[in-house]
Image 1 (cartoon, rainbow, N blue to C red):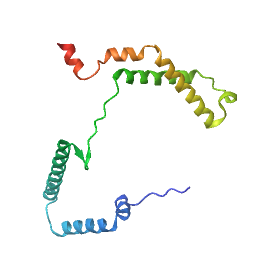
Image 2 (spheres, helix red, strand yellow):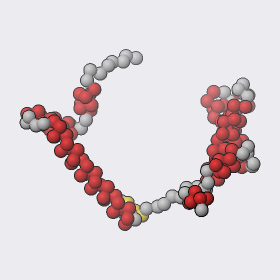
Image 3 (cartoon, rainbow, N blue to C red):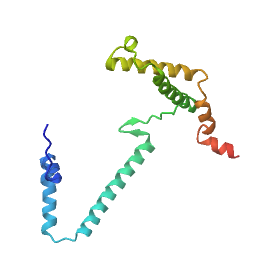
Image 4 (spheres, helix red, strand yellow):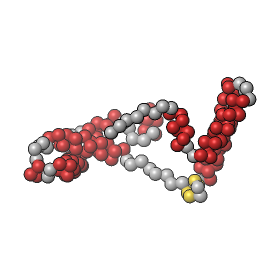
Amino acid sequence: MIVTATTDLVLDVLEAADPATQRAATAKLDALKSSDADFAATMEAEVGKAKAGSADQAAAKVAEAQSGAVNGAPVQVIKAPASGEVYRKFEAFILQTFVETMLPKESEEVFGKGTAGGVWKSMLAEQLGNQLAKGNGVGIARQLAAAHPAGPGAAAKAGS
């Protein structure tokens, strides 16, 4: 395998660009080069154009959100799962990691050889972790739930 260093990254990107876009960019650069325009003033003008364009796009997105449609489709709000479920899944993942490290390393007779054996072993560890977490687990989910009250309104309720 031969690795060649590129001589000019900018030229490589320009050659990979769309030919029409390349010609337009080259024409803009040539116009700037021949006009003796102040670089800082030109940059400020381009930044102003970009900000105006992004402000217009932001206003359009706000209008779409207020109308309840994006690209003509109604907006669907996806609710987050109950915080207890998130903590239980986290505990299941931690337990999966523990179980996987406890499983025997030399177990080709049971799980198979190579990648397939590793996948089967990982799947077993995942299921064992899930089942352990469904029960009482080891308390990770309970401690996290106690440390982080559910929902943004819980802090306000706790303070009153």
